[in-house]
Image (cartoon, rainbow, N blue to C red):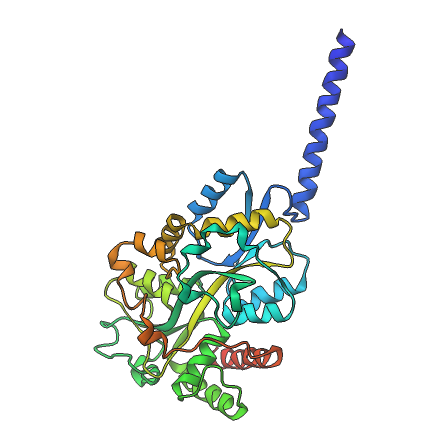
Length: 357
Ligand code: N2P
């Protein structure tokens, strides 16, 4: 009898040791098959309670990683060696990923909640028929300012940023397309302009802004502006919504020369290991209640029309963050300018950053 107990105990111990070893090896390799899902999203772009809710509902463990620019995300996915199951690129980056064969088609039969997306956000030119992508958030790029700190100045035009009274008062979001685009727009050019003379003109103009630029920053821009560490910021609309929520003295405007209208969509990169969980996660985020909770938490605008109905009227009715077609028709979506031109934009942005140091 003793022997049987001993044998039983050693089998049990060996079994546990094996289980431990496999789970250790899997986590070391960033393996995301089995019951895990790896999500790659922008920083500050989800309510963490939703991740916990998804894990509880599905038993799938979420490994969550963030990026702060489309360029960084693209490089990481293109390099390989990662196991991202879901990522959230913007419009032009989705088009580039399609071109570079970095995406898997989405199985819409697994997304019953897709019906809640407003058709206005479907079938856009960067992904006709939404073969590879499903809307997450959308918005604009504009200026947040503190009327008290700028002493009555308004920002109807991009040109207003160049005012000599704004010395060391402006924070810029650290994005190549946003900053170069602002330079181009301020000259009346398209933010998809590829004419070398226009691009050089924009760089020269941006370099003249450097005395006014306090810093180029990531997600900290929200905290800095809300705490009045700077008077003005070039920001994405959802960040503006959050800043204004923290400090209601501030204002958000989209200058009259035009600006960017952007769309961030969920995709399944080629690196995915757990397609089943990827579709479940996407469908979960499309659920109106979850989408509304997410929108309220991060401050960004939801493309989900059922979710919109669940949001308080002071959010859904705010034209600054839910602009109607009259404004959005005047804005431009970033085009996928091709590998070479996008690299050139990045170089110009780097030159500007060196200049503003
Ligand atoms: C959130 C960043 C949103 C990205 N921190 C806008 N495309």
